Image (tube, rainbow, N blue to C red):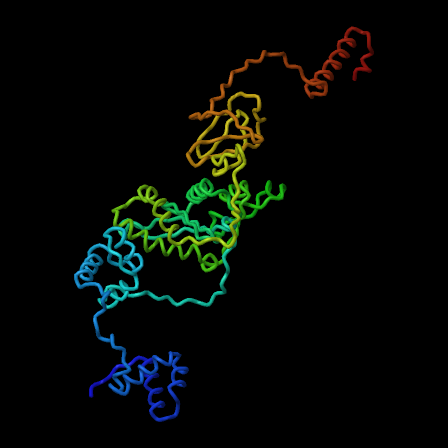
Length: 434
C-alpha cells in the first residue's frame, strides 16, 4: 500500500477510531471528543471499516476545484504583472486588476500565485517592543505631520519631499509634494487642511527647525515674556494650534506607516501615468489621496468634530507668512532682503528709529505694518543722495582774548615807553624811571 497523506484533524480521527474498535470508548464518546454529531460519527466509522485508514482522508483531496481559475486567466494575470505591475504588492495588484482590466481576483489568491511563481516575496522587518497608544477619540483632536523623502519620480530624477498630514482618530490624509521639507510647504499643506476641515486642536511633528526652534530668546522676547517660535510656530499660535514635539519616529507611527503606503502606491501610480514633475504630481495628489481615504479611513470613537471654524474677517493670507522686524531709518527707508523700501507720507507714519513688522506672504506679496496697521510704501533702487551746500561765512576781525599773552606783553611795553617819554619832558624824575 502506498503513502497516505493526512492532516492533523484526520490523524486525530484515526486515533479515535482505533480506540472505538478496541472497545475503549463508545461511538457516543467519540462524537463528543471529536465535536461531531452521532449520525456523522457513524458515517466516519463506516468509511473506516470499509476503506481502512484511507477512508478517513477527505474525498476532495487531489480533485480540481470547481471555482478554480482557468490556466488562461492565470497566464494573463502573470503576463500583466511582469509587463506592467512588476513590484506591486498583492493587495494593490488586486485593485489595479479590477480598476484597469475588470478582473476580480482576491489578493490572497494573487499572493499564492506570485509566491509560487517566484515573482514576489514579502519583506519582513524586525520591530522593537513598543507600547500601544490608543487613537484619539475625536476627528481634529490631533493631526500628525511629517515629510517623506523618496525617489518619487524614479532614481534618475532624484529625491523630493512629500508632506503628509494624518488625523490620529480617523486616518484621514492630505498630502503635498515639495522639493524640501520647508516652512512654505508645511504652511501650504496646513492651509489646505483648514480650508477643507477647519482648524485642528494640535499638531504632532518632528523636532525640526521648521516646526520647533531651540535658539535663545532675543532681548525683546525676554522683556515681553515670549518663547522663541519659528515662522510656522507663529502661524499656529495665531490660529490657536498647539505643536507637540515627537521624540522618535515610532511616536508618530500613524503618519510613518502612511508614508510607507505612499512610497508603495504613489510611486507605482506615478510610474503608470508617466509623471516626472512636482507640479504634475500635486495636480493628481488630491484625487489619489481621496481614494486612499475612501479605502483606509476609520470612524472615530466620538462623532464630535474638534475642528473649529475661522472667525469672520480672519485672513489666512496674513497668517501663513514670514514676519521680520525692521528699524525705520532717518529718511523713512527700510532695508529687507537686500532691497530698499521708501515709506510714503501718511497719517500713521512711524517716527524714525521705530520698529515695524515686515510680512511676506506665500504668494510673494509684502506688507509693512506699524502697530498692526499697514503702511504705504514703494521700492526704490537706491537711497536718495544728500546735497551738501557750501556755506561762506563773513570774515571778522580777530581780537585776542583779554588774558592772551600778546595782549599782556603789549600793555607792559606801552607803560615802559610812556614813562620814558614823561622823563624826557621833565614831568617825572628820571630816577623813578630806572
